[in-house]
Image (cartoon, helix red, strand yellow):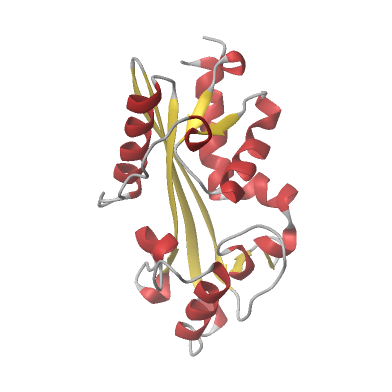
Length: 200
């Protein structure tokens, strides 16, 4: 198989996420496309009890609808002082109608009495690849800390409050180039790209 000539779909409407994944995959000459651009499909209810289960639900649904190789992705921010929350519910934290800025404010409010050294957190990404002959899971983790305030204008989601230790800046301050070297999503999708190009 030559993945560069193969259409690879992802079951996601998150354009920020899709743009980021394509930037990560660009050195591999791989491009993904939202399944929703070409097919009339319903979003999948994330009923799994883990990132892996949710990612597989999406990937299998996408493959079933298109017949093409499909990616399902689930990710979250796990904060130790909040017992791993928001975790699986990161995208829906605080309610479906709450935007990213309000989610970030809510987390900072919950952590307002927590000192910096106890604000450890981890971004987790699981990408599931489903094709005609099988499935494969790829995981990435990025450890850091939650900031005391919203910082930076780059990225999306929780990027403005997640500090990457080697730089002591948030993902939103560091920008796309550095984030896409170290992020949870970069780790998972680089592993996927290597599999697509060498092992599949």
